[in-house]
Amino acid sequence: MTPSNKKEIVLVLGGARSGKSSWALKYTENNYDSYMFIATAEVMDDEMADRVRLHKEDRGPQWKLREEPLAIADVLKTGCEGVDAVLIDCMTIWLSNVLLQKGEDSVTSYRDALLEALARSAQSVVIVSNEVGSGVVPEHPLGRLYRDLAGSLNQKLAAAADKVVLSVAGLPLYLKQPPSETF
Image (cartoon, rainbow, N blue to C red; front, side, top):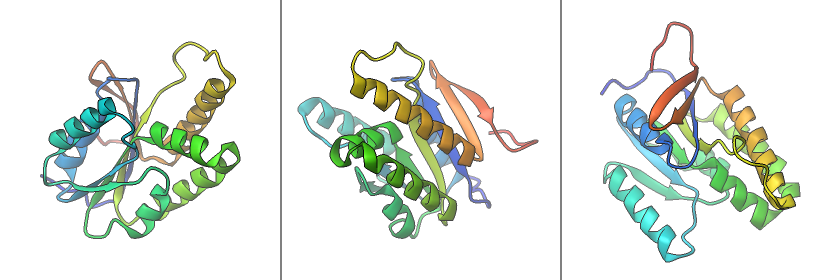
């Protein structure tokens, strides 16, 4: 392992089952000595419990874990001591948590608090998010609102990120990286 000496923000985008989470895990493990996983999903049924179990098995015991569906900005500010990097999976689940539990009017303040926490984080942060704007236009107003908010969130995260990767069919496409640097 060759830990990075520089704090960085890496955004990993992709559709469902695109390989984005696997890429983010490997990237974090290959570039840092210690890491924490911030899980934003809440277990509401047996199918989600199985998904969470499989994700935990994929990560292994070397990963610290913090389950936080809403206040990830607070976790970044105070709850990540002792690790080199934090992996957040995933922003679109977090966005739906904020939208459905706190309401549309709270999304901007949660997003802005997250962006501020990312800028001030002492750790590198790898962020996984779904690219939801490439599909059909959602039938219902809430679906269209969610799609638009997710697109806006991803744009702001990409602007703040040092590196942006799009995963398609398990293949990473490098959209943004510092000059003369390879992943």
